[in-house]
Image 1 (cartoon, rainbow, N blue to C red):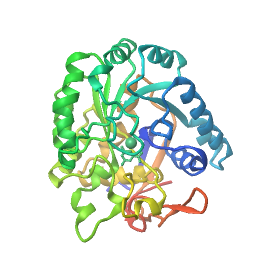
Image 2 (image 1 turned 45 degrees about the horizontal axis):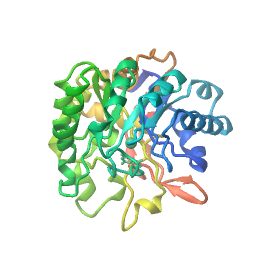
Image 3 (image 1 turned 30 degrees about the vertical axis):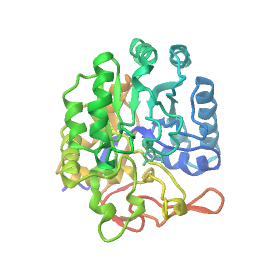
Length: 352
Ligand code: DOR
Ligand code: ZN
């Protein structure tokens, strides 16, 4: 039985670090495990320009330098920035982003799809000049793949996005690099498999470990609520299959998304699971459930770097098979708290 796992240092290709005082919690948490992190731009207001992305990166690095993590981890951590696509983003904005060397991708949130997405795109196919420029420069488009029409059931929104939107973007821009972010359905997994090498997908720990019963049976459990919402068990099973298949199209993206505890445990609770601290033990549990721990390293540390055209990290981390109890909460913001995914519960693996 495997009791120690040494992995090439992982990267996180989808994380929310937020801004301001939140960074003193989220940045050291992320930097303890990850080198490159793709920082989501859904701040208030969103990160829409290269100048804003550069300034945001500086704030993240300041929080890193003020934290008490090791110098080795400080040196390894490399936040990569993302522009938030709006109805006003231009081809010139894309050129500037590429030339900056700081912006690694552009994020498409359909307007209203999730937390702080009110400025998202309303006319996606009207963004043709932007997609053309991204295709030309090889800048990846990261998609939150859900339609947002009120008449589409929340459990069908991902599938509808594939049929109504993503297929059209791919048909019009066949060489555009696209990451289907945090996929949640067998439909999305199989759609990704049917595309060329320029289309990949990230998968979160929660979508591998849980299904909608975890969210809803026995009472509403707000800490399992994220978007896209957890689906049926058959979808969870298909995600486990593709994540552990060794196919380089599927790689890590935690979507770790902090919300203060009281804003999740509320009559209108926020969407997002906070997993930054224990993401790797969570993924290890998922891969072990499929008897596929030998496939974990490529998923966490190789396939994403390859997709983004970056070198694989040279440092490593170690996981051991030893039970840990996830903390009930972390201090967050001014006297508030942050409840992690699986708070108070036991995990079989820990990072040392
Ligand atoms: O659950 C989610 N939380 N999904 C998202 O797409 C956004 C994220 C957040 O920013 O909180
Ligand atoms: Zn996200």
